[in-house]
Amino acid sequence: MTTTANWQKSSFSGGADGNNCLELATTGPRSIHLRESDDPTTHLTTTPGPLAHLLQGIRSGALSPAAPETVH
Image (cartoon, rainbow, N blue to C red):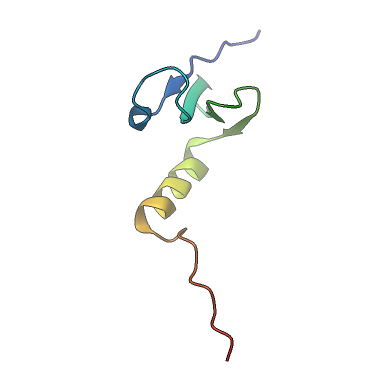
């Protein structure tokens, strides 16, 4: 049995069609799917734990790009 994903756009996308944004869908209690709206055929599937760690890293700034090293 195949479950159809009900994709939802990020609230930061503005809601209009054609906006580039992140979309999320679930197909069960432990399957979370992520895709970019401008390439809906490619998506990432994960579970709540790793997604929570990713979001925590983004919010805390731990995943911000490191400053380039200065060569002396």
